[in-house]
Length: 136
Length: 280
Image (cartoon, rainbow over all chains, first blue to last red; front, side):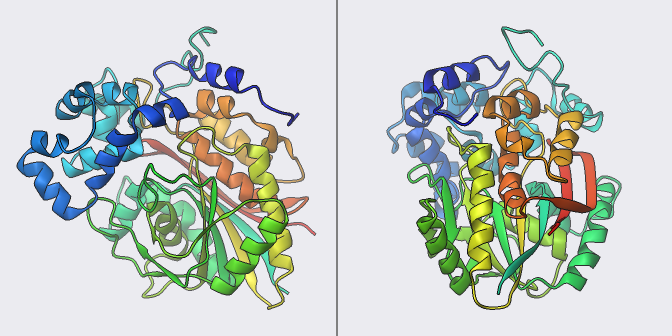
């Protein structure tokens, strides 16, 4: 049951989950500086510098232009694709004063009130949301 | 001899900390969640644990993307609540139990678990929210705490089987500590939730409850649930539930349930809570 795991099969399955970017080592590598930039916003003095001039603050970090544009646009799905992790990215929307649930809603096809209502009604069903290939 | 007398499972959603800190725990939204912890708060007053081994994950607070320990144990004297971007929570500092923590760390390493040892760190909502849920708002936390941080963010995270086995090794370590201490182990995080991507908001009441069922009694089935099942069934952040398996593993062959609670939703997350005791 717990013999060696085939790393290729293990990682391949992660790509079969609808609407989900599993934070793999490949994403952690790609997003390292993006996540460290996000983390820097935990310090009040950095938050002040960031708020004063977002672009200038971003330019001090070795991010790709694509990553910088996605940060400025607060395009969280794009940031996930570019190696961001949601716990690190949360420092950006916390600095914006946006609650976690509202930030989550921006990654879905719903408005925040629609998303909030979905959660009150029991959340998104796993039905049909488990596997892209399997469709279950 | 020190002994593990009980295990507690609980979600650690940051919004619960906000509700406590802002006095909203009995409003329409939070009331049903907190009511499910009333039993436990009374029970903890009677149990008076000396130490809690608190299994949790850091959410980009003490650890950044630089160093990613799979299993880290806090061996310090005390820990401050972390500033997670809106100032630290107004809760007491957390007092460690350095003697027991170092004893557990050494025992685990000799037992083939290559632990990372932490002397100084701040602790985020993953650790302080469960303390608030179980103890309310005291001037000082009523017990010492040994933080045990697990990487459940960067893949691969540890397998369920490895977590369970770590729990078993923690039980052996605690039982070889000469001082007479009442030790509890708490496994926190979960239950189903997904905080990212177009599938955000996924919850799975049936799966979560089956998982809790598996921790009661003598079944070992939960240790073999693969990561992909957590991901598909419980959302990308539901993987935190592997931390409950460390708690379960530390309770030995069989458990009995003392209290159980489940509520949907708290923000993006399903709240689960379980109090177990070992059956000797």
